Image 1 (cartoon, one colour):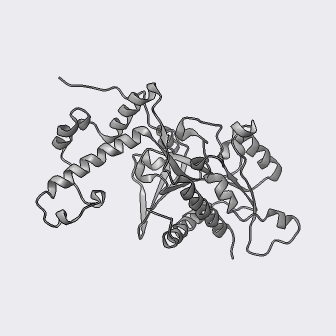
Image 2 (spheres, helix red, strand yellow):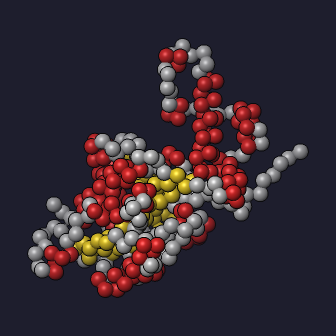
Image 3 (cartoon, rainbow, N blue to C red):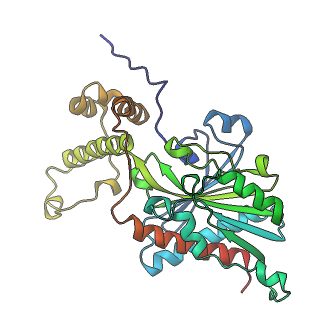
Length: 329
């Protein structure tokens, strides 16, 4: 007797195009920093509920030490310069979305704290050669201001008339491995809050009539992704242990990172461990868990305990990266 689960009405939240796209992508590796570039046509973008444009994803392991921080920042600058090449701007307006009082949502304001603002110098004729005109704002969230953030940004755009808008926001991921370890940049704009089901008005060229570059880092992950990833890790742990049960060298290692090993997972082992669930693919497992947790209010969005420290580092990296991209020092 076969068992079919209808999952079409359920979805797991994510803002990352790389987690949704099914087409071939361009990949570049800079030592241990991986860059993926995806060009979505209008039709392809509609299929994954995104907008047409280029989506660049930078993946890394760590930025908490100076060497890794510098390495990732260099890649970030390189990729942001590529994305900005097609836009000739007299004035850049940098917007840091999010709530400064909530660690996983404070990325945008943290970036603004590190952005070099220069437009006031240009107004007084004292802007030195090599520096671009830059204005910046962290507008807060609608719950604090009572103003729709996109309306506030539109009023600024109408008044300042920038040639390009750069918007930074915290994102959601459907994978533990990308949490705080991924930067997405795109020329398609952004829908604030869409990754956690709290979709606000779109901020894009279509709504503002100004090119919009959106930068973001996934700082939260949903409970279905955590459970699904844990099941997948259990498969890999079981397969690794099974393959190395008689390996004397393996017995000397107390903590083996099986995720870095080339492990082949047998479908029969998956079914043996988890029965019907073991026969489902990764996406179907995530959606099934969503189906179970959502009606009872346990579809939680989770962030690491050290999030305030990491978001501060990420804000510094992106802020300094924007400075070094725009200004010639």
